[in-house]
Image 1 (tube, rainbow, N blue to C red):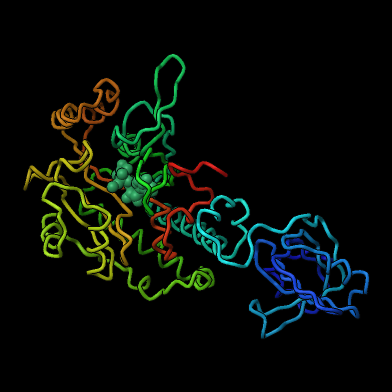
Image 2 (cartoon, rainbow, N blue to C red):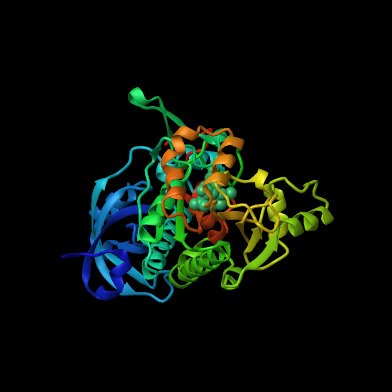
Length: 432
Ligand code: 4AD
Ligand code: MG
C-alpha cells in the first residue's frame, strides 16, 4: 500500500493509501469515529466505522488521545463538504504512540504567554502553521528577487569585532585572547566591502540586538536581509526596496491564499502594495505629527506611536526620508542640501505596522566618515578595514536592511512579531 502525503491525496482518489501523521482531534461515538488527521502537508478527516475497519480497530481508536501519532490506512474519497475536498474511509490504524497525558493545548483560548511557553507544541496548531508557510514563501521570494536581478549572496559573519549600529544594544561574547567579540547587529559593513568587490550583493541571516524594549516590534534575535549596491544613490535604493517589497507581497498573495485565509487576513490592503510607494521628508513628517498632537521635536527619531499615526494616513508603504544626522547611525551620508540631515529612508509598513526597513546612502568620503566615527566615540582601530574601502576605489553606494519578522507581522496581520519566528527570543524569553 502506498504512503501518501495529505496534500497529494487528490491523485489517489478511490485508492487505498496510508497516511502517517498525528491526530489533532478525535470524536468517537458508538460505532463511528471521526479522526482529524494532520501530517504537516495538510489536514483530512478519517471516518472509521465498524463495517470498514472492524470492532477491534474502533475500540483502539476510542482510546486515542489528541496528538497521538498514527498511521492510518483507508480509501481516499472526494467529498465536496470537506474543507480539504477529500475524506478517508478508514480501514486500519497503527498506533505509533498514544500519549498518556492530555495534550496541554486545548481548543479553548490560551494567552500568548502560555502559548509561547509551549511553543514547541504550539507550532503544530493551524495559526503557526500558516505563518511558517508564509515565512517560507517570503524567504523564497526574497532570494528569487535578488537572483533574478543579478545580486550575489554574501554570508556576513555573526561574530564580529566592530560595532555596526549602536553600542547600546550589543551582545558581547568572550573571545579567547582577543577580548570581546559582538554578535552581529547588522552585516552591512561587511556587505559594503563585498559591494565594492562584486557590485550588487545581499545577505540574509540571524541578527542580534540586546533590545531592552518589550514592544510588539522587538526581538533580541531576528532575521534581516540586507542589500548593498555600488554606484547607487538613495533614490536608486528606494526604488529597489519598493520593487522588492511589492514582489514579496504579491508572491505571498498568489501562493498563500489558504494561509492568509486561515489567519483571517484581509488581503485588499495587500493588493494595494505596488510601486511607487509614498515619499515623505522627515521634516514634513514631524510637522504632520505635531499637527496630530505628537510631542515629537525636529531632531528626534520617530517613535513607534508616531509611525503608526503616519501609516494610517496612506494605504501604501511610506518612505520617511532624510532624518537628522544625530538620530541615525555614523555611516550615513551627509545630505549636501541640508548638512544637518543624512541621505536615508525608513520604510513604514501600512495599517499601523511601522518601520520594516532602514536604509541609506553611505558616507563615501574618508575624512567625513572618520569625523563621524570620532563624534560617536567609536573605537577607530577596529574600523581600519572599513576605512580602507574609502581609500581604495571609494564610490557612492547605498543599501538597506529589512527585518523579516516585522515584515511578516504586517503581511500576516499579526499583533505580535513573536509569533512570526519559530522560536522567539526576547529579553524575558529563551525557552523553549
Ligand atoms: O534600521 P536598522 O537598525 O538598520 C540596520 O541595521 C542597517 N545596518 C541596515 C542596512 O542598511 N544594511 O534595522 C533594519 C531593520 C529594521 O527596519 C527592522 O525591520 C529590523 O531590521 N529590526 C528588528 N526586528 C526585530 N527586532 C529588533 N530588535 C529589530 N531591530 C531592527
Ligand atoms: Mg531603523
